[in-house]
Image (cartoon, rainbow, N blue to C red):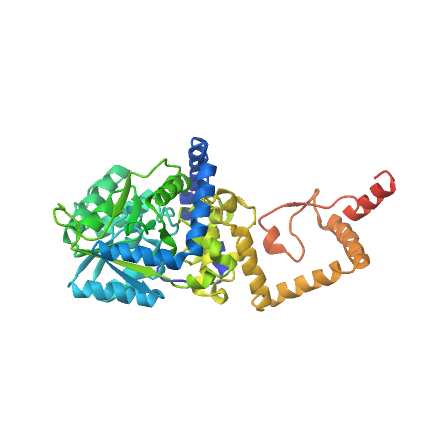
Length: 476
């Protein structure tokens, strides 16, 4: 999703992504690296599948009793000296955060990586209200300089090359010598560290997301590799956690199950460099920490999912494994989706958040190969849920007229056995004429599909004819 949505049709965005040489170069290593790293990490943890099943059962139990766990979580947060705020939608969440910032006279806010804040467009909202909001995750910081939004939920700048990052640093970091060498990743990292260090020290409020909210202790847990999360939640006077309610888990042990699954599924790490737990504001005798601690619990359509099949999508732990293994995402990247959550999980979640009318193309942007479900650490049946949206799209007459008539024609033929047999025989005969050298170059009535694929031209008889001969004992 770009900072300013193009409003171009999905197919046009896809064509633009496929023709973008720089993007394709950036995606090339991504196509295999994350898959190999995950496979190795899972292989080295024999109990991975057992943990996966336990985590799924734990999440299902929590969602079935989410009202009780929300109450238990709030009670513990309040006991520790913190505050819990409930946001039914994105607008309410933004207003809550802004009110807290204004009450403390905040001029600068540092933000840890948070997909919930992306979902409600919090950074842009704070900027529009006169508060400087600085992304402190390196990938998020890079795309903030570029005026973009994440193209991946774990690696937000996966679409950007090293040379592009150097160009952006030279353009924005005017206080550094213009002749400096930014050709090496280490020099880019060192410069970003110097710039962000000043922001950490100047921040009045720190905002983080949460990988887990622990009902047992009223704590928030985040996993990071850069340490920016710790600096964001300990240095400012005020720490705000923004997270959707499905991040709640019953106990610290339950949270550790998620921690064992998430990095292995995301990028093949056994564990992230930092696993940080925050419980309330600074207590007497603490050497550091915020003076105030706030949690904004976001709904934004999720409560409506609890009584539907889509409840299963609320098990998501935002690891990005489904994107890493999706052939569609690998080909076009995240921005072509123009959604906060791209890839298979985005194809399920976006219609729930933004409405099916504006995002009906996303559930159709899938080969249904099943990779996403097979690697999902929480065993979310993503193809089934995308199929549900396709059915909903058809029943609400959102499918293009040509496609609807094509499906109706096929259904009418399929209901008449004699007509179906005649149609398949005719299709084989015509297929032999259209095919060249045993393959289709352009499939009649499906050119947009066959432009990117070759199909074998049909040979011999229909399956039904061969099956009838086999049943009668006649040699095929």
